[in-house]
Image 1 (cartoon, rainbow, N blue to C red):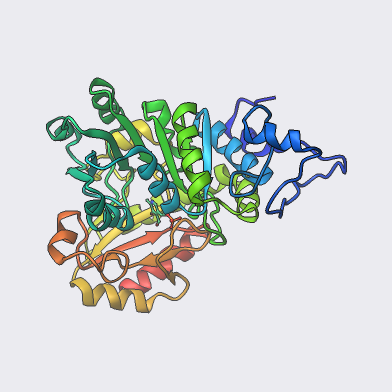
Image 2: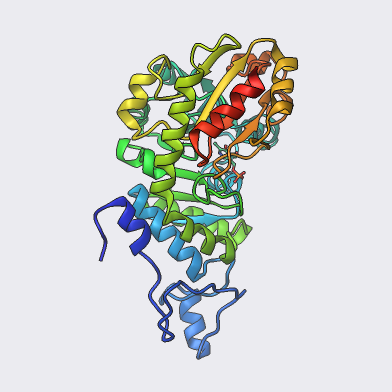
Amino acid sequence: MENEHFETQAIASQLERTSNNENSVPLYLTSSFIFDTADDMRAAFADEKEAYIYSRYSNPNNTEFIHKMCLLEGAEAGVATASGMAAIFTTFMTLLKSGDHLISCSSIFSATHAIFTKHFPKWNISYSYFNAGNPEEIEKLIQPNTRFIYLETPTNPAIEVIDLAVVSAIAKKHNLLFIVDNCFATPYIQQPIRFGADIVIHSATKYIDGQGRVLGGCVLGKKEIIHDIYLFGRITGPSLSSFNAWILSKSLETLALRMERHSENALYIAQQLEGNAKLEFIKYPFLPSHPHYNIAKKQMKGGGGIVTFSIKGGNEAATRFMDKLKMILITSNLGDSRTLATHPSSSTHCKLSEEERLAVGITPGLIRLSIGLENKEDILKDVLQALN
Ligand SMILES: Cc1ncc(COP(=O)(O)O)c(C=O)c1O
């Protein structure tokens, strides 16, 4: 039975029990699957009969993970991948060919930006960027060879919020696919397909796991497109391991609870830091001072767990802040039960020029805090003592 509510769907939808009648879903650590007869194997390869063949294609743990993600995002079908970048790259490579063009936003995850700038030129694929604050610009960027619009919202690390309904309307008008990386929000907070997106991508490494244990990703959307992405992935091999799928499927059972608490803690930290004399600015989607606050309120159920702020005194002050943190950990990851700090200009975005960083809101003093599930007073105390 498909249950109505998010929390219930995330828990109740699971693989059918085996004859052992286990409570917890078994882990299928097998590279391939066997057939009773040669004809059964032929029928599976000929798509006449649904069957597991080989774990690069699929396996029961991946099926369960994807089934849940589809329910939660409102998607028809999905493909599980080994990481978020595997999901992004497999989608791009399935949908694009030499001579094609795509439109994205200048505020985008650094590795996605690197695909556009470093690798696409080799395959004669071009891109144009619109500004997050002005998605109407997209119409002017459309070319006869444009295949899709691709964005993430909120963006990493600048926390820009892009109006999904506005972009979706433009995509529909021009018959373009609309693809959203929903990594920062998760389906608990925002469901892009309900706003007209055709494909949703996740780095499950972040909040879907939520405990910093495994890498994973997925692509979700309409059956026909997903089938093409599945066939491409089945050949090229970006598959999710069954162990990681098993972990991620279990993690989804607590996603709603975790996202509620991440959002509550992050809003509190953002509110307490707003106006702090040591900061140039602070950005959080659910602070009324955020330039896209109204859009965030319209399309997001909570503000999510990421707060970014810029410390006065630039690189030196930001580095000192990071080194003074006691409980909060220095890492490039995000979406963990622990509060994590990143200084993007010296780490995740160090390959960009200073000019490129500033153009997408990454000041030398910018800190990205991934607010965890600790007591919010303890998180605040650590941030304040490091600031002071
Ligand atoms: C918005 C966004 N998309 C995609 C990725 C890539 O995910 P992964 O590290 O799982 O490949 C990240 C990683 O930080 C991200 O922040």
